[in-house]
Length: 467
Image (tube, rainbow, N blue to C red; front, side, top):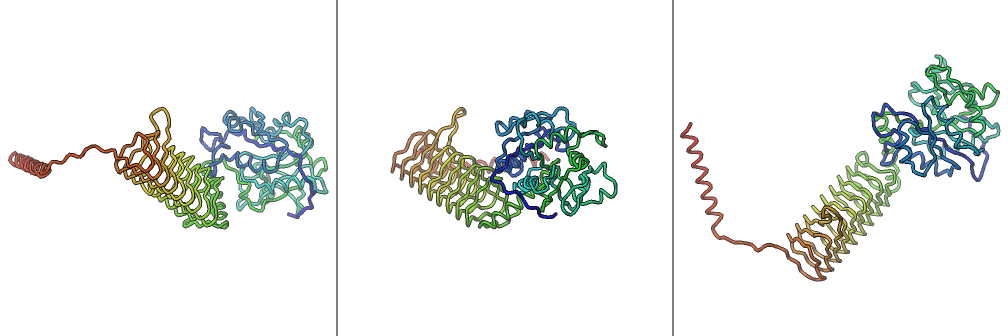
């Protein structure tokens, strides 16, 4: 489509109306469709984050089926308007009119199950609305590889729309048009609701279509315009589990490329999964089959080895994680520290240069700089009712298979002998050994083996005689 001059404005007075009233039956889920996550974030939140970046005057989410779930998830972040019963997209937008009383600016109509519309695209639509020809409505179009059953936008090369038609109501020539309607639309508030009041439901579905505002404006002799997405995936709707998986794949592919472009090394990119808020420093190395759940920050030069899972964790400069490590919420690794295979951290800090190389659980703990945590060590942080803290001082050495029974403090430079169960504080520089006395019985094992071998031989003989 032709590029239009835009009216340069320092700020925009616009409201966002997000439609989220549908039942989402194809998702076959008790969870509302728009709350299904992509990259660890509900699809509705992906869209809201983009909208928030444009500083709207108001945000109205139109709810219907499953409204309680959506309202709870939104909290105070947006107003809601109820569409009950659901009579189509035009009817849905009408439900936001009362909430927009007094708003004379623009309205951007979006969809909770179309989460990846870019902020630049939204801005372009609002700019087009204020171009020299002042269209009554601006529609966002796209050209998919397979137009399928999308509604069509009939427009000339300048982007002026002559007709909008749903696929079910389109004739053969109209269905041959490749420019499709995404459903995303912009209009001035007064124009939008005036046009909506004139929309009827004389169509194949018996519903009030939002797109009909374009046809009504055209009949009035007004101009309506379309701008087109450069990437059709930007307006992909998500209505089923398969489409949700495809959207996740699309998002992950983009994020992997972005991570590598920004200086991270991914050994097998297709096996690494990021969350929406994963932060990576430069020269980070990520081995195969690593999962980043929400809330993870990785500093420069860190290495995340294969099959590790991180969530709500902060990994410092030059740290090493895994393989097969799990960092849970509240895990903090300071510069140069290391956790190895089958180590789990939860709400614990591993000080600079400290190490827990294998088979260890650190929960509700603080480990000082340079400390060494031996294989099989666990912090016993839970008594069945409350969580308790373990503090390990700098340069302390915790021997293998030790149980630190919280609340307990191990002083700096202290040594806990292997196999100890420590339930009282250990002073700085102290050795703590908690073991039962060893019993020695010379020759006992030899006599035991002889007795058992004779017994087994006798059983075999008795069995053979009976046969």
